[in-house]
Image (cartoon, rainbow, N blue to C red):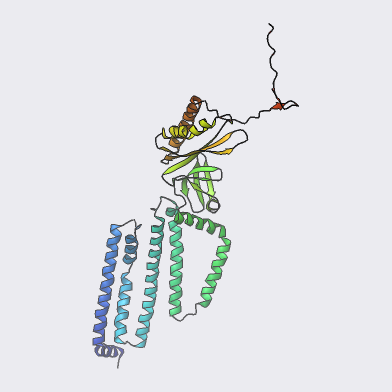
Length: 364
């Protein structure tokens, strides 16, 4: 009996199983085609893929037609109990196709989650530059796992391969640990978002506006105009104050009054400070209190809040409040203190002696 006759006999004997398998395969492929079309529509509605609908759509739309065909053939043959060689060939093809398809799904899901978490469009921050590197790293990782899964299912001993990849990864990591530390620091900035491009930040003695978040460095333009370049790793080690956060700013003015100021006038200081602060648009007094007995003054602290984040408006309001305080204190004859020392000299009997010569009385 020829091979062709054997094949014909097998087809005739398993015609019912082949029919059932074909119906199941057609139904499964139909569901995958519907899901694929739904994915395409979701992507068209959210082309930026920044939303979850875009992420899921990208994953579904990446279902490939070859995978559907191989899956359908494997389902049909599993129902029909084919010859061992054909069955083994079908299983191997399905394992390879499924591993590759799963790697594609995983890559799109991971990249979509990263894009959603970062929440930036390509080119707006370092994610536009980093996304290429991230895509390469994710692709290498998921397809390496797919390759190991394929080889393992084909009966290949992958223990040595996994060990070799681990040792190679450690060697590469040690050789490029500086580059990777800055890269992961850039990703930490993108994910944790301590600041974004355009924010004004302050660290150590530097204040500047973030111009670019790169893979290795962050570039700022300082308030004095020069460019400041800081390694991402070193930047995250510092205490960073993001001046773009919140909706308003709190400012503190400290001043001292002379000890000769009467208590009644000291009690009037908070009311004068409130009038000076709230005379400026968008400014609200938090407190104005005596804080300490200083070496040469009664120390005061004035705290106010300024609505908005415009630094120029804040500085203008601060200067106007200081000038208004000067006018109001001068009108109430309240004197600001400055570092002075007064020496009082006493006679042996305890009588105070003037520390300066008293002019003689004119002759009669």
